[in-house]
Length: 119
Image (cartoon, rainbow, N blue to C red; front, side, top):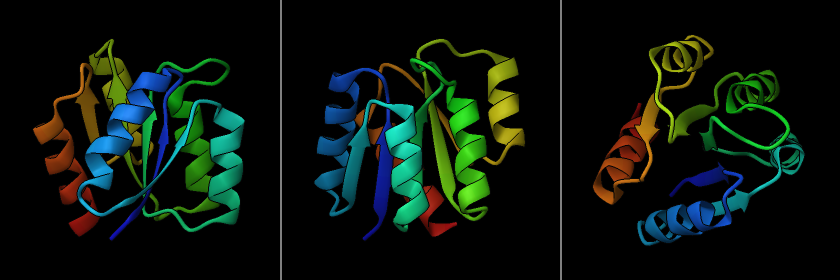
């Protein structure tokens, strides 16, 4: 199965995502701090990153850019509780493969993650 990095500034969100995806057999590594997630990706192979757009210090889009510099082939799913066409377009232009709106729907998350990992 896949190694999935999850970054969200809300601890409950990363716990929920880890619970959902671990049941599918994935190794899920969670972070609430941007720098820790970027450092982890720089020294470990990651198949997929799930990033919240609104974070503490950096935006999810800035983290996406940093991860793409580390591994241009990393697959990324963006999360947001504040969907806007502008942020969606920016994230997709930078290489995010999917976009999920909070609150997280378990079936939608599983489906999008599976689609990204196959592609």
